[in-house]
Image 1 (cartoon, rainbow, N blue to C red):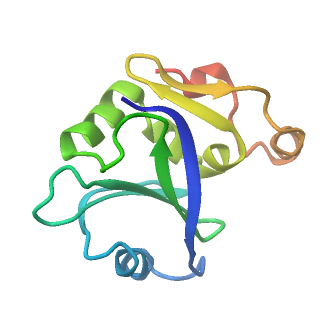
Image 2 (image 1 turned 180 degrees about the vertical axis):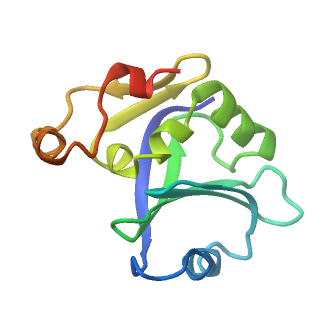
Image 3 (image 1 turned 90 degrees about the horizontal axis):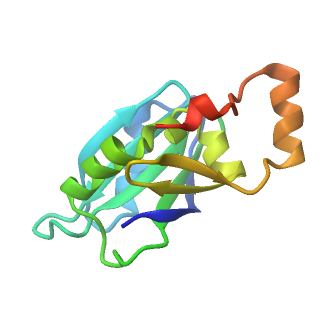
Length: 149
């Protein structure tokens, strides 16, 4: 379960918009899903939604609060119908997925793999643009200690 991370942009919201309104917009496009988990960070918001009556239908969404973009998170695994709350808890606990959501720009701009017991692993090089931004303003902590479990 889990593996390479794939992000798909699904909606745009205003950066000034209250989080509750941004989440309401997300729920409007998720076919009646309800919030099962909400994990909030200064730069990102992680929401796990589930369709009522279908405990294996969960979807993972990340809001980059600075960019105002909602992303659907998927993994290269065999869970095509969705995830359960236990799967989500396992992702958070055993894969340290929250470390990526704390800095959603890292999640967007780099290729990642999440593996139970290992944590987030950077696949390939950090894009040059991201390296330059890191040097300029120090916003992105790309040290291995920041992403290891």
